[in-house]
Length: 215
Image 1 (cartoon, rainbow, N blue to C red):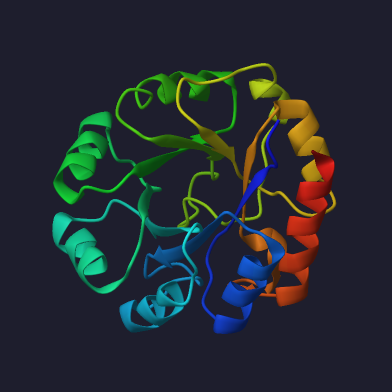
Image 2 (image 1 turned 135 degrees about the vertical axis):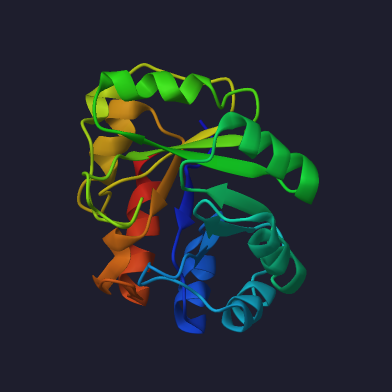
């Protein structure tokens, strides 16, 4: 197995972007969703993304965004991938991929085994799949809630496109997450924060180091 690939999502400061880069993260994520405490203004995201060296994937995280919003991000922020974290249909995913010429990662929330059926619809249209915890009804944020799901639900499963595991992962449980699911990519957001939306550079370094030590 190649070294596990880590995505640090919801970055809003130069210090934490630098910590992610120096620690060896493979992806850095910038959230463009006003309801999120991790929402980044375009000007800030442009500055942060511009400082990321080649070889690290810069991901724009959006939620049911209209074409005009995606076009605004694409025009001002140097990003390498869109992450769609809303209720986008497979057709919508395919349309975004074709229209904007960027790879697309589609997030799918999982709470029980029946939710896994939804993943099949994205296998042919998304470049990657993010398997995340499904938020309880009434929660405004589709991700970044610090909630996990029963990883045994995807034990032994695989998909025909690269996939990433998210949802309630911390330095304390990342080894279990990897061993149970066989994930080769891990996404973390709230697990490296000192408060909602506030990333901690030391927690980022610890998380990436711990994840990489597992495999």
